[in-house]
Amino acid sequence: MYKKKVLVTGGSGFLGRRIVEESQALGYEVYSPRSVDMDLYDLNDTLKYLNCYKPDVIIHSAAYYGGIGICNSEPVNLFRKNTIITTNIYEAAAQVGVDKVVAVGSACSYPSLVDGNMSEDDFWNGEMHHTVEAYGSSKKIQLIAQNAYHKEYGLQGNHLVLTNLYGENDVFTEYRSHVVAALIKRFADEKEKGSKEITNWGDGSATREFIYVGDAAKALAQSIEMPHDLKPINIGTGIGTSIKELVNLVSEVIGFNGELKWDTSKPNGVARKVLDVSRMKGLLPNFVPIPLRYGLEKTVKWYLENKSMADSRK
Image 1 (cartoon, helix red, strand yellow):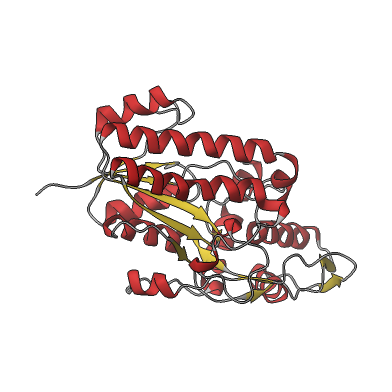
Image 2: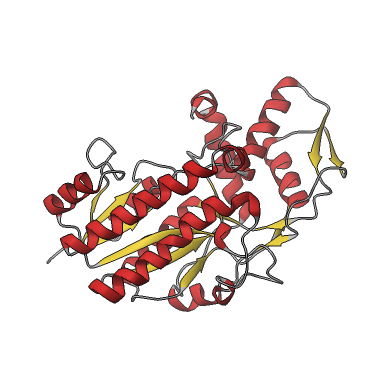
């Protein structure tokens, strides 16, 4: 029986390595080339690799990304690098005859002033928050490329919009980390130092959504058989968690017994960023993400067991 061939870009990364595992578990023949084997910034190199292995489906998870530090200091790199690899992947896929590209999108691409949970119908209805505009735009271009290449070449595709990821093998260094990894590192460090209190920005009321990296990877692997879709597809839990709730959870799981304070002179950020996952539930009816606390326990356990290595990653 023919085994569908799936190529995962960024297959050694935080999300990519889990996509490889989940795709293999579903019985696919999976390729995950490193940059020395396929340079995504070079169209000819990308074409050479695809022509050699002839994948049926590409899951495009490779990306240059980071936390607010990179968003503030490297907007050009965020936009330019991600746009180059996106256009090269779609062009090479079309030339080689790949059936389908599944692209990993980001909730950063949504307008910043959506009222309530963010539905796919809101995707084009407003401006992104200025702090994530470069990265969010580079991910939004994936959907534009998908639909353009489908119209002209018949290339199939899905654009899966992921909410905030967390989990084992995340980046915990301050410059590149996102909120969950940053909090885990901070609370672990402060506990180690014997600190009596930790002060957090804002009042903790801002609400965000978080999905365990293994669950996001399962959704991406399951989407291999999903039909072509012109619209984005939200992938998340649909559950909002306030920053105060998240801080309390991380504190409990780490075992920090000091006082938690809030500096209300600091900004909260956007009040609410939570995805409407109604379409996801219809398309992936068997997909059930794990609870946040359980995912945090798994992540903290991995981090504490691998702290020196995790803290040194760039």
